[in-house]
Length: 223
Image (cartoon, rainbow, N blue to C red; front, side):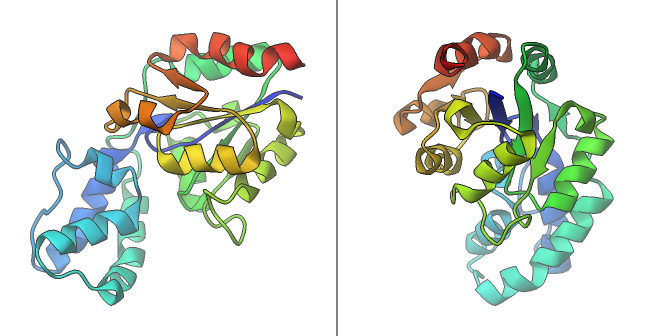
């Protein structure tokens, strides 16, 4: 089976608002107030919980790995309580997923979000059943950019790694695809979209409406 594997945060959905809210719970407990701003720090948020804590503490001259370790579980708990208050799929994302499925592609998610939280988010957003597999940061002993989680996603879809493409939004996704020997498509509509071309993916995606044709050009004709 031909397979299309998506990153989640910043690729399928803009989850930055809920991530920032959870990080600010931690910063308030530290006595720092709301350190991160939803409008200005979306790019930081989409790199994960530890990155948000590191960025906020660094701004206040209080960067301490032990503090990051201590507050990371608190952040995850706060995030899980309000995981889908502000998170939305990017325009056309689910339509593209349905189209790919109709064309015979297996469609899955490979994310560096913890698996239980990724499952919770997809359930709360009402879209989990559109994806045949979901592999998270802690599903395996390694996470992206190690290629193993991507390969595991393809395996769970019953797919062929030689007929797979990874859709992402970061250097992590680009490096994962390169390590796995599969083409990557990087979206340009996220907060770091202007930086994607420099990563030299096999394709850039400005609009999800174009994705089925992009995927067909990369792997569909090899099936």
